[in-house]
Structure formats: C-alpha cells, structure tokens
Image (tube, rainbow, N blue to C red; front, side, top):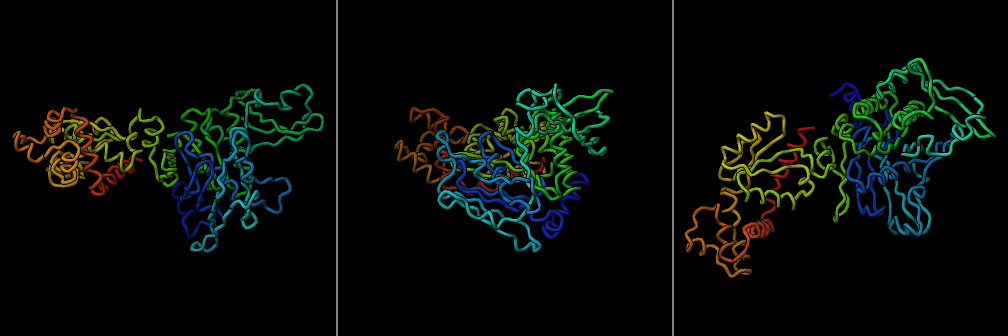
Length: 486
C-alpha cells in the first residue's frame, strides 16, 4: 500500500472528511433512470472506480453524480450541468426516465454523524431539489472533452493559416513531469497557446520534446486527452468533483498504471473527489479496494458490488475467458452441485471461477498445491465427510455425508422422483443393491430411460430449493478468497 493511499485514507476518515474534502458526496441513491430501478453508490474513498460490462449503468451513475451541486455564486463563466442535459427525451428515447424517478444525494457536513440529504425528483415536467444543493465546481471529462483535431471543426485546424496568437499559458514544471511520467516521454515543456480568428478564441496545447515542438493537431488521442485532463485537474479549484469517462482510452498499460497513481497524488494534494468509469483492470489494481465498484445488470436489476478485485474484474469483462480463481472438487457430481449453488446464490461468480473435477480427496489437495505453486489462485471444496482445512484453502460442502448421499437421500428429492417418475428411490437402491453413491444418478437414469446429467441436475435443483441457505458460508468463503487476491 502506497504512502499516498495511507494519507488519503486518513484524510477521508469520516471525522476528517469534511475538513479536507468539503461537502463531498458520501452516497448517491438512484431510482428510475435508464432502467436502473434502484441502486446505491457508496463513496468510500476520494477516488471511486466503477467498472462493469457495457450497458450496466456506469455512465448513468456518473452523469447523475455531476448534477449534485449548484453553481458557486462567485463564478461568472462556470456552467453547471442538470439532469436534463444527460437524459434528453426524443422519439428515439421517449422515456429514459420513469415517472417516479429520483436521485437522493448524501453530502458530508461538519458533523459527520449528520450528512445532508437532498432529493432531486421530477414534478410534472420540471425537477425539484436543486436549490438545496451545496455549491461546488464539477467537471465532466467524457470522450468529447478532447477529440483529435481532424475529427472536429476547430479554428486551430480550419483557420490555421490565419490564426493569431494571443496569451500563452505555461504549465508548471512539476505538472509537466507528471504528464511525462504517465505518457512515458520526456517533455522540455508543455503549454497552452491562446489563438484567435474572426472573433473566436481558443487554446491549443503544445508540447516541446526532443528539440522540437508540436501542437495537439499532431498529437495522438491518448497524449492529447491526458494533457487536457491533467491540466483541468491541476488548474480547477480545490475540492472539485470530477467525473472521468474511461480515462484509459488510447493509453498503454504502463500509462494506465501511472495515471491511477497520479489520481492518488492529485487527490492528496488538491482534495478533489473523482468518480471514474473504467474497463481497465490495470487502473483498478492500482487503486485501493475501497475505491473499486462493480456494476452488474441482469433481469433482477442493477447491483453495485464493493471492493472488487482486479482479477474478478478481468474475469467478468472477458466473459469468463480469463478466470480469477480455480476451484477443485472431487467428481462431476460435486462440480454440478457447486455450479448450481453458485448460479442460485451469486450467478456472476460463474464467470470468475473455474471448477475442476479432479478425483480423490488426495488428488484434490495435491491439485490445489500444484496450482498455487504455478502462481494460480486455487482452493478446493471437498466432500462433507472429509471436512475442511481452511488454512490450506480446503473447504467442504455442508452436511456430514458425501454430496450424492446428501442430495438423493433428502426427503424432498425422494418425493420429487416418486411424483415425477413413480420411482421409490430408497427401495430402488436396495432392490438394485446400489451401495456406491457415485452410481446413484447413473442407475436412476438407466431405470427411467433418461440421461445421467439430467438426473443430477434435477435432483440438485430440488435439493437446493430446501437447503440453499446451508451453502451461504461456502459462497462467503469463495468471495473471501477472491477478495484476498486484491
């Protein structure tokens, strides 16, 4: 853990927070925006990195957060943003907001036990609540804050021959060094040159490197965007709120890592609050666990998970092509049981873990040892009659018998087979002399002319309807193992 992270944690402690960061956001509660029926974003650190698959709602959260403050009275040029700026109604999007939509903002005050709560909700065609918001400078740095000049009509390109230079604004040497560390270039200087033409005024970023200079007209997207982002973070008033949309865009991985370190540094010096959306496991890994949020959207709604590890994130964003944790079990029945338990309790974990049917108890223990030796993250879930050894990463199914016996000897499962197939399971095992529990499903499948996998899944699903709470500790153990690999 870096010294910057320790310092920020201390400054952001609930008792110190308002003194250092002013009326910053503690929490945002969202209802009825772009299908987000109910979601709570807890801001546990000055930097909050929200990740998730495309369409999960990351942009919605950031756009609502930037609407949390009213314009400081002393500012003449600053323009605040409102909810209507991000959620326009049109024939293409007739109802991006529900009739009962609202967002509840919770702000820090000088009494940490009494946060200020403001609800912004729609009354007919207008929004109420804005007047009660505290003042703060807020900056939204999306993809259009810096576009390559060839992609936009800008006087520095389209009137370049006739431009007149106005005032030049030099960037402080220390800030130039920070930009250089992120991009990986050594700059002699970086400045913003004022330009004008036919009454229009603008600024053009200019970098000086390797004995020559070049303007942003000839910068790559990543370099130009970093220039603008850092300049805004350094030149804005202290204690400002920043919303950054995917700042890793067009940055190589080393630059992403250095940028995350820079965010820790700038928040420590200037006490900004930063909320960023990202798909970068590199950025997530460079930030402390309390910074990390994962948004998951499914048929049940939107869920925001806290303290996501970079490994978990990479597994989810790769749709399971890269797994964060290997779990070893004894046989295929145990594998199916664990898969269905996870599907019922924490479906998202299925894209994070890889479950392997290994063989005997000793083989499972050895597989975990070898996987760990090769640098992989691995645990085991053994049969209940073997028991756990959690210090070794060896857990067990609930109960006191092998999982096949726990399932097929359960009264609800026996009643299911009697009702659906007119099969008395207990009598059938006695009649056929089926003493080895490993053959329970196979023998039943043969008797009723079905497939073994169908019998396994049917029995497990019925079993879990009645005992699924018994598996809570096992799900907690898996998530704990994932969190231990931040």
